[in-house]
Image (cartoon, rainbow, N blue to C red; front, side, top):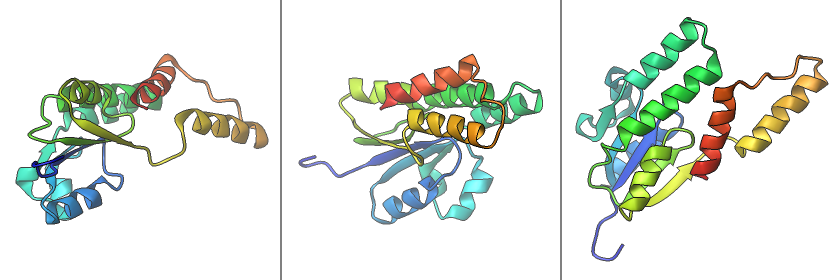
Length: 164
């Protein structure tokens, strides 16, 4: 990164610890922007400057609407992730490092790599395949019906594996 100051763009579908990361990067002068599916009225209490925040609420609206209409979590989450990734890739700004929360940035990662940007992928849980195994084991242990993975659930696993 010779001669060029670090400028980080963060993509997150929701909150996680991304707002704390953005706040600290901003204090240090390294935040280009944070792109989130949360509305700014929720973000403004997190001490992140408005000009550094891009709130793309449509993915969040579709996610919640999908749940309300009975599409299920996997389908709703998959389309939220895909839509956020597509919208975010066009709004990376003048960054030289892209920090993406897993599931939400496949399209932006591809775009970043084509343009020579470095990327960091963060996952707040264990590896997606290990998570799936643990969930199946716990269902068996507690006598619950095995998880029925729909197409979108499988697609989300594949999406995260491609991000890795």
